[in-house]
Length: 97
Ligand SMILES: Cc1cc2nc3c(=O)[nH]c(=O)nc-3n(C[C@H](O)[C@H](O)[C@H](O)COP(=O)(O)OP(=O)(O)OC[C@H]3O[C@@H](n4cnc5c(N)ncnc54)[C@H](O)[C@@H]3O)c2cc1C
Image (cartoon, rainbow, N blue to C red; front, side, top):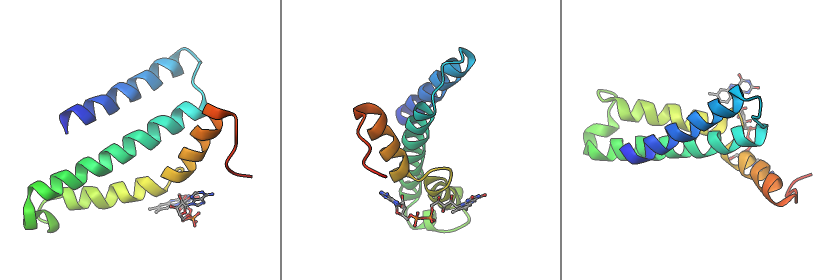
């Protein structure tokens, strides 16, 4: 979990560097949003699992965090839509009209 979170932080840091250099492209934001939200969603699930059945209850924070991450996975560009944007950017071929 620590490694994945650190990798996500590095990606966010790189975006900040590009932004400061006025080199940030929307497709790079898609890459970071897509990756980091999927990562955070997976880590929230692992945190829930570590608590066993207690993790399901609202007495512990991971389940609430998981619900938040499901939201972020959908809004501000769903995971799938960011995949389409990246595919287009990497290949020059749009899988959408
Ligand atoms: C808590 C919350 C707050 C929100 N707040 C706002 C807000 O403030 N302002 C606002 O404008 N909107 C807001 N939204 C709406 C959000 O932007 C949409 O839910 C999101 O864009 C997805 O649209 P949809 O729900 O119509 O799903 P759909 O477009 O019906 O998509 C359903 C599923 O199909 C996938 N999909 C759709 N098209 C394709 C495709 N071509 N290829 C592959 N997969 C595809 C999607 O990724 C998704 O998984 C909010 C949503 C939530 C959950």
